[in-house]
Image (cartoon, rainbow, N blue to C red):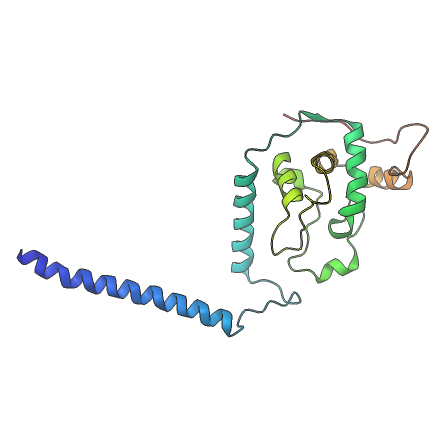
Length: 195
């Protein structure tokens, strides 16, 4: 019983100290928000900590949410062609393409949209599908779920997986690949088997 009398004040002091610390953190956070300390202007880059925090959160969230998605077994020339056309319509302005720069206005976005030339080295097909379908908050990456069908999104993934080089990409653009085409097929890698 004597031990409890000794431990009890220390326990109460520890609880009070923890509660005071939690209250200070909440009030500090509230003041940080209400005083406008954080610069939300897109003209100033994120801090290293903010960049790390948002990147890590995004990576783990995408991986977690995309686990249940099953990618189609393979993608052929038709899917890659449709994906190229959809990419040209909806994606190239922000993400550019092989030897195709992003639109000039994109340089005003923070964070800057990534070029997608090596995107398949960082993301699995199901994760790319999830990103395109759902978008990424606070990045300017929109959700395409209300604009594109699942098939159209998978076609974009197939195009990204095809990894056309700059010459092939330019040939596709110049050949008017997205318009009804008659004649010989356009050159380039068009079939994507998936493991």
